[in-house]
Length: 233
Image (cartoon, rainbow, N blue to C red; front, top):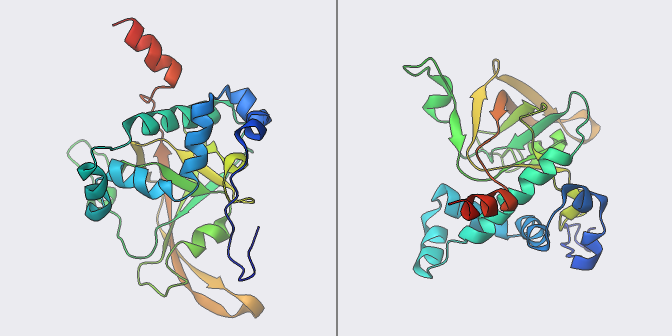
């Protein structure tokens, strides 16, 4: 849905309506988990990821000063992502993409082999990806003319997969796949430079596309698993 200026409009649906979704019922989401996912698809994603990544310091500082780093909400959101990922049927050969904004470089550990022969880095926050490459390009920094326009391209599998949260999104039509925090990204092939064309075939600029493999954090737990763990302590 767009407003008169062509901007996306946020729509928050009633919890009773969301409970009736097949995705929610199949994933056996609790009401709190539904709310956590919906909140993430709005402005709160910046808060949760700032807390998990410990950056940017101004956002983190405000919540730390207030004595609330949202630990319960973050754990509930992790639980919801795990459940949705487990119960979602993904299309064969699905590729996911993530635009990096054009202002950051991948860390040296992504390119340089360490003493154990490994490369890559852990994403401390929730990793938002999309099945729509054009959307990732819009978030790559290309539109703003930034020098580091970059898109990550990743494949999915039976174990390493994101959760499709499109049905719960505040923005209708989005195709977002969310990964739990502490997933690990490593290179899977050489980066390529792609020419992006606009209307009429005119060149808009170039974007570096980096193929990566994402290993999902398999130690993350659902709410039910955490309750069992606490009961058995």
